[in-house]
Image 1 (tube, rainbow, N blue to C red):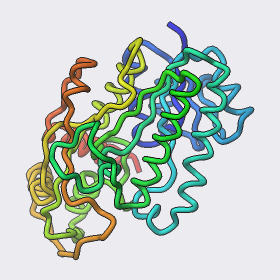
Image 2 (tube, rainbow, N blue to C red):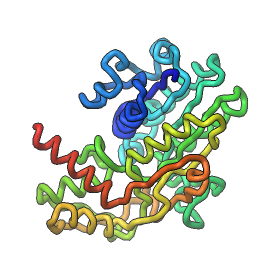
Image 3 (tube, helix red, strand yellow):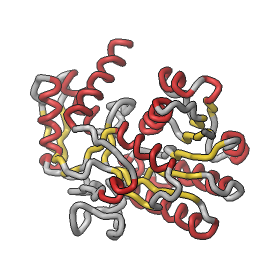
Length: 309
């Protein structure tokens, strides 16, 4: 089997590396900062390239011998993107455009991009949202991911890029660190464990489609192996969970009630989003991790890193 390249090895990228290693591969990893030790070990020290994916020479070197690219690089988190959308565009579009330009000279290399199914649909007229439904983002973060999708689709049509875009729902799991303004699962786990108050926005009625990061990584790895993957596919659990119900599950995992501080709605947040995953399950076999089990795995990881400090 030829090499896979994982671009960006933060939260989801770490899971993609771990998934590829579980399949017997040693992927090349191009990332700005050094991943967790176990992720470096999974790929192999010699496979790690620290560098900027916006730099053409760096990307060309990383692509040597590669037949699949898992593009997991991102820019700012959603709240930060709302505050500084120009900076987020710079951080996100630069690496993507550099990679797309480099792939024009490498026909046949498969390319998978992690997009945001939780934001690009906006507040959809129907649930679950299907791939053919209008993309009407209400946040700067969603608008940027939609812009990235359009550039990828233009390359597919004009230059035959073998691409698939994964519109992922709300992804959670290990390597998603609390305290960064994203990720209700690790944030709730951490704050309840520390007996710190939890800010609950919009009375907890917000509904999200939560998918464990290992499942999203497995979907990406499997789609990259297909000869003709769907150019656009939703990746989610396929059912919704309210924020207050998620909080109750986390309380049950910790064994202690949360101290909740109610806050008003944030204008850039989608009220309800659930993804239709029919196309995903027609394309690949994928077993979805139950939310309770995914929360337990995330909790074990958080406890392990706390004990290691």
